[in-house]
Length: 117
Image 1: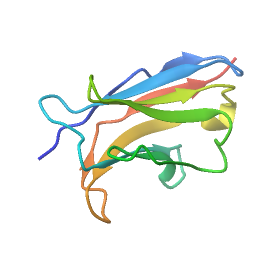
Image 2: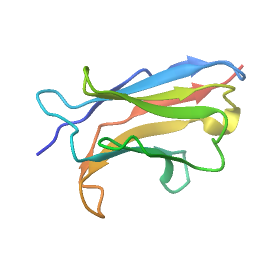
Image 3: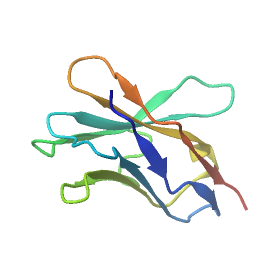
Image 4: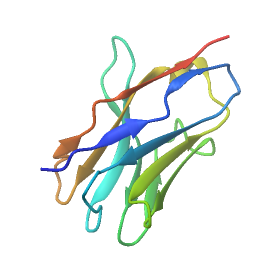
């Protein structure tokens, strides 16, 4: 079992920035893919970005490309989602997830991001 802990959400004005963090206390992300997902009210959960821990490969959804960056810090065993140029439509609960195979097995509790003036 892998426990994931997210942090860094909050309220920000349009055009602002936030950085989300995802940690797995007492565990390493070695051999995992770690992803960020989000779910806005009344909408399905959608994938935002993914990073392969071992090779550092990344993926970002078209809706966030050029604005959001996923990265990892091996020493801190933490994955980050740097979110810049935030828009109202980025408002959602953001979840961190991890997997070793095809299925996202482990999920964090979620952190709220609200973009509003």
